[in-house]
Amino acid sequence: MKAKIDIDGLSDAVQEELKNWQEDTCKPVLNEAYKAGAEEGKKVLLQGGPYKERTGKYTKDWDVTKRNTRVGRITETEWYSVHNKKHYQLTHLLQNGHASRNGGRVKAYPHIDSAEEKAEKAATDYIEDKLGG
Image (tube, rainbow, N blue to C red; front, side, top):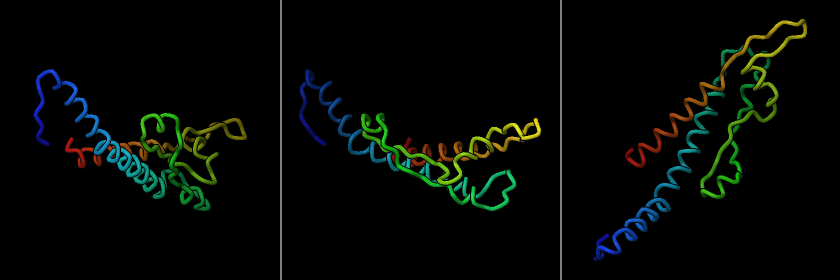
């Protein structure tokens, strides 16, 4: 955009252009990146983990939900949560291990951490691709 700006108004003009760029370009890309990251995390978790599953129900119940958060409303960004719809109680037990009935410990199967890392990488790659980062 071409515009004549005197030196006194340069600071205000730059701030206005940066605000417009943030509103028109950055926020939509961030929202798309958050969704892409959440979907990637779900995809990784749907593939299963290092645990032995008897029924297959735990693995297939992963889902992505758009969250309505205070921070999201303030920043006008969309937040997503990857969660297990029906077997949410097992996520902590499988991820961290737990005490068994006979007094021992059950082995931990850290499967959520790898999905989180891949989701984060997918989101950052999406942002870098769209914004040239």
